Amino acid sequence: MECSNYLETALNKGEIHKHLYQGSKDKIVVTDLQRTLFELGFRQELKWNNYEADGDYGPATAATVRAFAKKNRYTTDGISVSNDLAKLILQRHDFLPDMYLLWSIYKSDLRTRYYVSKGTSTSITAIQLLLNEMGYGNLLNFPKYGADGLYGKSTRNATIAYANDNSLPSDGDLLSRPFVDLMIRDINAFYGENWSDLAKNNLPQSKSPLIFFEGSRFRGKACRTDILFAPMLEKVNDYAERSQVYVYVTSSFRTSTNVAGAIVKPASRSNHMAGHAIDMNVIYGNGQLANSKVLNHYPAVDEPVRQFISYIINDPQLRWGGQFRIKDSVHIDDNLNSDRNAWDQRYLAMQRAVQFGVYA
Image (cartoon, rainbow, N blue to C red; front, side, top):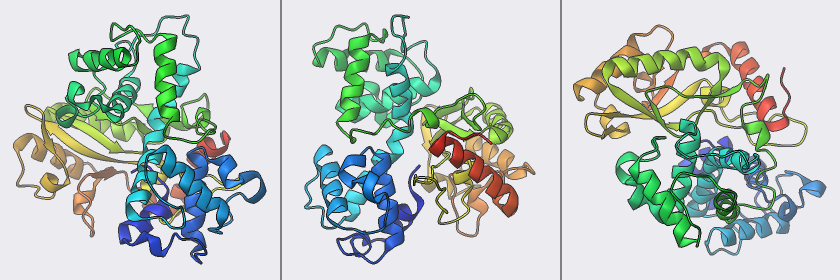
């Protein structure tokens, strides 16, 4: 998940309510919760201008947790955060980068005709993710294909149904102003009033190190990465082409949650935090999916998958997480964090860009 690192780490250990409750002394995890809720748009509820992220799980934080839960149809008094609620918070945070893409369409001049089919793979993926979230997964054939970034009959039919169910005419392709307004309305239903405040910084800009990598063999979530990692992804794309597989991205660059005037120290030197790693599944054959359960059995996997992973293993600049001491078979990176100074430089460059719009 592309989410806040301390909150995710605490959740993975289980019983997160022992860290997140009114009066908690675990300032690090509470601070990360507050920063995450800030990025989800709940500035006013947090009374951010007065307190920012102070690590105090007091009435304002409890009220913010309730506000988020109410928006997302989850019942809580806000006094503590359960595992399920924490997962939902992180899922919404993970969802944000793709929704920023739809926000950029919303802010564009739609007098120039925009079409779903003529968008980038990342913009089509964002629309597919939203349509699935709004209940049109069956029409998208989402269980089989997920958000593949391809405009076809399924995406067209889901788009038409979504529009028609909201009393809008649609050919399933034209991004009219009423249709785009509808998408933003439904995104707003998940987030606080200020959710789009950081959108511009989280999209590729001139001089920003952040780019969206789009390879011919890449599918899934928007692949946000450091521009310096792009040559490695080109190689991954080439290996996928040779193996006749697709790389289905589930996670790429992860933001370190925002706090005014500072870059938050991460829980670990993860290459995701510097934009130098991806998590992925492998799609091969007739839509077959090799996820972690399958990849964990390498080399005893189907030949296209075995060939692809072999290419990654044998590349001197790439690492496959299936060979880590703690196996992470969906992970690919370039070992940037073996050089602490190099990692620190790229981490700071990426985080300054997305948090503050500062390009070194």
